[in-house]
Image (cartoon, rainbow, N blue to C red; front, top):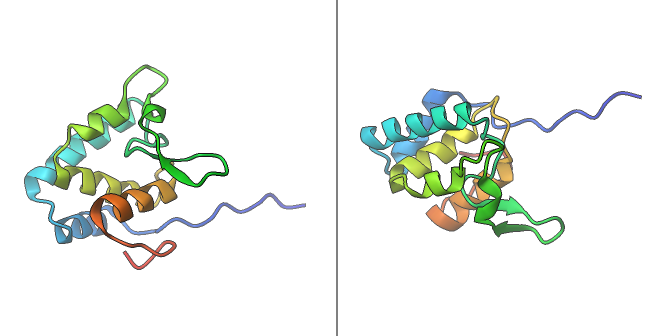
Amino acid sequence: MPLPIPPEDSGYDHAHAIALSKTAGATDADIAEAETFGQALDKHNAWGLPFNGYCNAAGYGYVWEPTMGVAQDGWDSHEAFLKLSRGAQTAVVYTSLERGHDIDRESARQFLKHERGIIIHGNQPY
């Protein structure tokens, strides 16, 4: 019996994530801030954490749960995320939807919907 195939992610590249971020109001300074935060996520192995605050509450749907963003080394990714500018937060979330990141994509969609008013259906249209 074959192993289950994981769902496809968005498949877009970094340049597209940046373009979407700028369309949503991010500036070049916000993008630079987001890149630095992305490096911190790499360093603390935290891309898979709900750093934006939204996580699956096991049967209750997606909820705001900021305590789930603490990495194994103790770094609080959610606390660091909240210190970012609004544009940088948006850029980080769009960047997290790129192909190859180990993240909960529904968490990113919930952030964009509830915090930015951006609706994404499935993995499109971005």
